[in-house]
Image: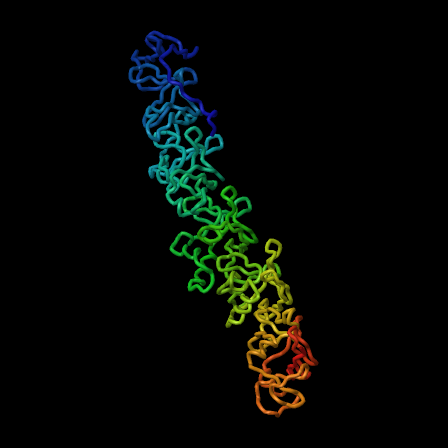
Amino acid sequence: MRKQTKIAAVVSAAALLAIGASMTSFAATGWQEEDGTWVYYNRAGEKVANAWEYSGDNRFYLDDAGNMATDSLIEDNDDYYYVDANGAMVRNRWVAIDNAEAGEENQPDVWWYYFQANGKAYKNTHASGNIFKKVINGKTYAFDEDGKMQYGWVKKEDGVTNYDDNAYQECDYYFGDENDGAMSIGWREIALTDVADAETEQPGDSYWDSDQVRWFYFKSSGMKQTSSTNKTINGRKYGFDQYGRMIADWHSATANDADNQLSRRGSSNNAAVTATKDYAREFMYFSSPEDGARFTKGWFKVVPGYYLNYKDYDDGNDRWYYANGDGKIAAGEIKAIKGKKYAFDLKGGMISGLALLRTNGKEISEYTDSDGNYDSQDSFERTARGLSGDWGFYYFSDNEDKDGSMKTGNQRITLDGTSYTFSFRKGGTRKGQGINGYNEKKYYLGGMLMTADADTKIELLNKNTLEKITVDKFIRTNGLVGKDVTSGKVGQANKGDVVYTDGTTGTTGTATGLDLTSLTADYVVVNVSGNVVKSGSKVDGDGFKVVLDGNNKIKQIISVN
């Protein structure tokens, strides 16, 4: 109901009133004009008081002095009526009556009444005291027991306006302001003051300050929608808290309990990792405070909430998330989405690039980021050699905004500015995990192809530990000395004729270098492409020639410098 649809009463000084042609004077009977006002005499010649009398189609009220009332609210037999400036009873009309208590706390300037066809004001007649509602011109209004139109927040149980700052928490209906009063149906934005739980909702976000403007949704009955995270409105999903406020941004039923400290904890080597994962899986995202529609299923990229991931929230880092069909986010898992696999850390953020995971192929128990752990070749190899159990390296597209999916097979990955070849499993329960050990005639450590450095050209690779060593360092580490090929004498060395042994003394020995067999039994020779050298000879960058027997075994090491 708009203001202009109501007719305001104007209280004025007594004036000479024109009742109409039907109000004629008869000696001591009917209507008479006396001293500037109208009175009514019955057939007995008595002045009528505290009663209604007709003149034409209109009814007029005689007060306790017998004078016709004007511009007055009339209480008669517990009902309320109004007579206008001409004294006629008002019907089918809104009237605003000055409030004698205007200016006092929570008192409006006027009270609005609606007078029916019989002249009676609508008023609450429910013995229970519950709200009294009436439809007027297609809109619904509430009235108290005195016929005053109620407005603002109104509780179902008493049906009267609640002026408390937190009235939205207790009340069920909203009826506009003092000059409107129509029951709210559908969406309505309402200003709230001194919100008690403001600081616990989303600390640091001004939207959640004590003074807020929040959206509410009122059903066709006028009752506000409460306590739902799955309300469909115009084909979209919305959430509402226990007080009816539309939920916006991040929300979880457990976000404000003692477990909120999980948002501040790391995601690796943490006793609470399972709890963290389960905690994160309760979060939903409801878009901006201006929109509020829930991301029900699919991808979205936003800054996480304070209670979901404090570090990224504090840094303002946006992350990719995936909402399942119920709106809750994926967390701590490798998930198949439209034929591709994606990984989500223990706080729900999509993982991209090279990742170290402890996983059974589906659930992720722990996740270690690259910082200092595998951001260079040395740190990668050190970390990879220490892995056991369900730990393994996986690779997800670096271009997270376009892809982010798991990659398998051979991949080129950059560590500290240098590109390396990796290989990841193409199938099985460990699909995507970096290959460890021998595969397709090459050796891999955590997925990284074991190759010789470009400067050394070839290196010795331990098949068991997957550690690489240069020929020169192998010689020095094992204390190998030279043996003249012709004489067999240890320590005598001629260029091109030295075979390195394990230090065996004496003159016995042959040019076949059999003394190396036990020392090199666990080693193979790899080149810069990662290929295992099977036969022939290869000279490294330090001037050592390694001779092989045709079965990957080292036969001789000869100095060529």
